[in-house]
Amino acid sequence: MSARDNILSRIRAANAAQVAGKDTQSSAARLAEHPRGPLPTMAKDPLQQFTDCSIAAASTMDEVGGRQDVPGAVARYLTDNALPMQGVCWPEFADLDWSGAGLEMQARSANGDDKVGVTGSYCALAETGTLVLLSGEEQHATTSLLPETHIAVVSRQRIVACMEDVWDLLRTEVGTLPRQVNFVSGPSRTADIEMTLVYGAHGPFRVHIILTDE
Image 1 (cartoon, one colour):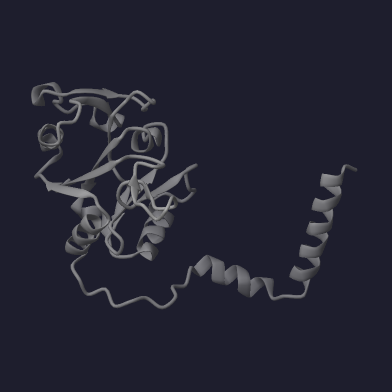
Image 2 (cartoon, one colour):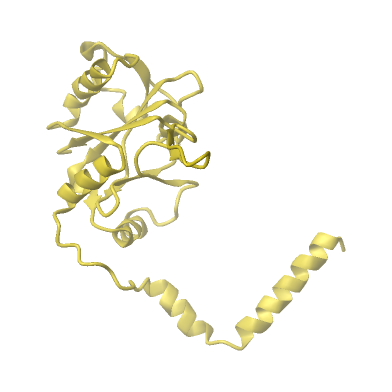
């Protein structure tokens, strides 16, 4: 037996001894029920709270009607901020008229050379202005992480009040979680060095959110 195997075997034995002396049925029942702890009063409209918290987290916002209006909104944002008019998007947006809006958008995962990434979102969290993104074959995690500018399309109908609502939704709709569940609250930033706030330290410099009715 290697030293590693020996250590792990002792840990397993210790855990088994501890579990044997406890009510495992009540523990399993509690885990299955997912009881909620105390929550703050959340009387504010989720859409308004999500907007306010997103802006407070240094994201920018825009609103459109349907998904067909997304290319125009993306082009407007990139033009207003003198940003590149080309980038990558999740495959779910491949059918949109990007060229009609003057954009070059490729439906693929991002690499280090891509400056703009357009993604959808699984849902959004009003309490903290947070985007929730699930990874998958058609939801490339790199598209929200590598480009300097991350543009996220969020359905108003998918904005939930609190973190507990996010996990309830995932349990109901997804079941087995994907490899990654990413929570994005504004641009990447750090103040580790001399307490100076620096954007883009571990991800995008900018996060722009486009709200849609779909």
